[in-house]
Amino acid sequence: MPKSRRAKVVSLTKVAKKTKEQKGALIQEVQENIDKWQYCWLFEVGNMRNSHLKIVRKLWKDSARIFFGRGAVMAKALGTTLEAEHKMGIHKIAQQIKGQVGLMFTDSPPEEVTAWFDDFHPPDFARSGNRATQTYILPSGPVMQQHSTPPEPFPHNEEPQLRKLGLHTKMVRGVPTLDAPHTVCEKGKVLTPEQAQLLKLVGVKMIEFRVALRARWTAANGEVVQIEGQSPPEEAGDEEAGADEAEEAISD
Image 1 (spheres, one colour):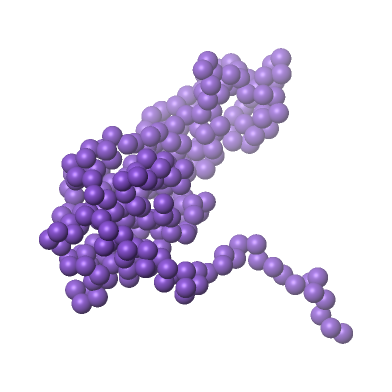
Image 2: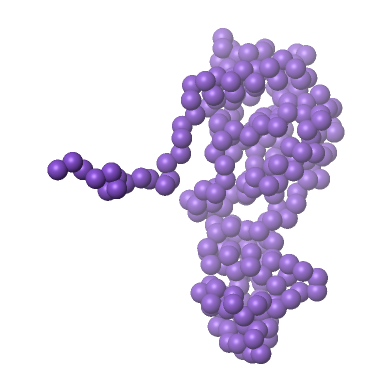
C-alpha cells in the first residue's frame, strides 16, 4: 500500500540555505562598498537587538553602509590573506571577523564616528544569562507596570503569568496584589529566564545596547588601526540568547 502523504513529517524549524548566487551578490556588494568609501570599520555588537541595529542603520543611511551577519561571506569579500585581499591591507580586517561583528563603510572622520558610538547606548531589557545591574524588589501591594507614567497595575488576566514567574499574588478588587515584598533579582547575580521575563513584564531595563568599534581600515594607505579602550559588549550566558535574532546579513 502506498505511503500516505499526510504522514509526511515537515520540520517547522528548517531554514532555507543561501544560494551560491545570493552569496556571490553579497560578496560583490561588499566589494563595491570597499571601493566607494574611505574607511571600513569593524564593530562588535553585544546584547544583540535587531531593532537597535536598525536605528543605527537608519541614522547613518545617508553617510554610511552597514553590513552585519554572514561573517564568512563578508570575510571572503574582503579577502583573508595578503594575496586574496580586495584592497591593500584590508585582509587584516577580514581576519578579525568572528562572532557578532559587522562592517561599516563611511567617509565620516574617525573622530566623529567614535564620538557618535560612544554616545549611542540605549537601555534595553536583560535576557537570561545577563547579570543584574541592580537589586530589584517589588513592594507589597498592587503589582505595577513601569511602562507608563505614572505606573499602572497589571490587569487581572495577567495574574496567572505573574504566578508562573514566581510571584505569590492574590486578587484584590481585580488587581494582582502582593502581601509581602518580592525580590526579583540581586545585583551581580546571573538572571534566570523567569527573572528576565518578569523584569520585562514589569518594564525594568537593566542593560544597554552598545556597538564597540574594534578596528578601522583606511583606503588611502591600507592602514588598519585597532581601537582600544572600548568596553566589550556583555553577552547573555545562555544558549538561547541570540536565537530570536536574524541570521541573515543585514545591509542598508
